[in-house]
Image (tube, rainbow, N blue to C red):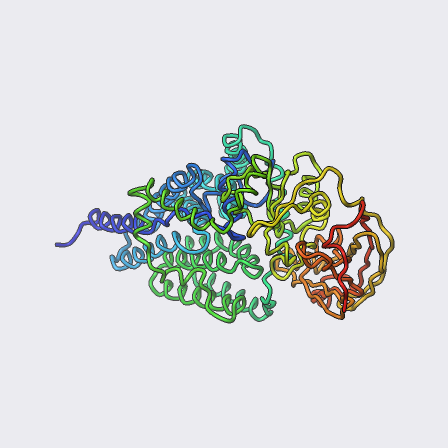
Length: 640
């Protein structure tokens, strides 16, 4: 018996709803040691520790950052689960209306679109940063509905998605905002309507602070949250570029551009599909910039979402096939350009991962048991970060921070955490972050104790081959100058704040001008303090544009020691203006008389040969004197 149109759509809706239930991602992960796990814990713990984004800590994740990556602290799991179900339900309803609301002439087209819709729902709940992809998908679908149905109320309703997206992660809100911007341009150009998009922009400008006010009770910190997001974006393109990731060749960009042009030509005959193409294009360019820097997984997830949307909307079948083929070609070219060694696991491979139905449905059926299991797993994983009873008794209820980034000591021991603003050293990669941390350690709010990760205290190694003392130059002098070694305890080294700083204020002792990138230069020998080199350099217009739209190549400093050993480390170039650590070259905080003496240096900058920097730079030498006898780890070793 043939189904009526209503019955047919009802069956399709049940299928879509089934996919919704089966693909709700397991919300939550256990608390555990690790660099990424540490910042995830941080955002999950702020609420319970009376810490506020913008006021106490600064980053590109906002007050609702725990919704992106959730840990079993307080009611976070329950809130995140409710948010996930709400978003998935909204996706189901909006997608169904968008793709299957009007039955086409041939029912086979409906079946194909239903299959693509199921794939779209399935993929948005999986893969890298699925919360961000879900919000991007929901916003774009609502804007597309506003266009296809000529109902601006859908665009206005999308503000309810965009505003919280800004408070989860600034870049997610920005991507969602690009959809509103494209729709506003279309309203202004095609409908001669400027008033409505301006009113919508004003409503968003009021809604985001209103949410902030509802969460915190005042607007303190909003400005610093905005500044920190801009600073992180600005510094990311130089300090966080992936090591070993080659420059994307010109032919790759040309091929990507040509493919996008062919895609537009393929869909321009269908106004709604052409609008969808333009809708996703600005966000795709933003994702492409960060994909070639360090986040290819999000780029491929976004591009795959673009592929499914375009293919689902394209009509007739021949155009669908052409769009799908061109989008697959686009993904392949991007993969060959960004990760030539293998096919990216970011977006496509997520579809072949098995669905964890036990976790997905278990969190809904028994949320209390699900959270309890995560907490139990956390207790086991945190075991390596537990301190001895003696150390725990010594710390008591005193304020504690961790350095450089391992925060798991806090939850493992129930400590009173008082973090610095940029609470992990590796992302304090601009003078603004560095200055905020320096001011914190100078202030009475600085913690009484500092727990160093023992491995980092012994090796002085930061991420991506950096030298730890060059990550945040202003801050590290306060950390080393205002804290004394107390004891080692397993994976932690305990330092206590002292009343009188060990270091004097820095002063300039000389300058070396007209130095050339990639060529060595001698280091002046000075006793009685710490010698640092402040780099003074200029980016050209080409360099500023390259950084804004693409990325900078990793820049390195080579130290020639008096033992003829050469130490090659990556440099945080923006912070180099505040001083590169030179002498004594500290190799460990745990081994006395181990420091080396640097006799020459070389700054390796591949972008200087491409015209991104002025060909010459200068170095201003500064000396930071000791107040009394230096600590053992500052004392020179025997070079023989």
